[in-house]
Amino acid sequence: METKLYVGNLSYDTTENSLRTAFAQSGTVVTVDMITDRETGRMKGFAFVTMSSQEEAETAIKAMNEKMLDNRAINVNIARPREERPRRSGYNDRR
Image (cartoon, rainbow, N blue to C red):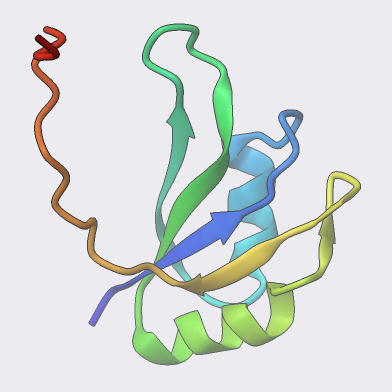
């Protein structure tokens, strides 16, 4: 079963290809999702990497967590489901 990993503390210089290459050493990389700011298009410093199995994901965590990538010590762990947040209306309700 595919397993999604959270990869944090990425350098703004990190590319999808460099991330895919680094994680491919631990197994089959299914997808790489680089998270960018909607307004600026600039990378936010984290990404999600989906590995093809739980075993490969665990191998990638052991191999990559706290390792240097593009001069930054990255954080790698199993991605958690996104928490529900209240929807912002854009209108200030203070009265």
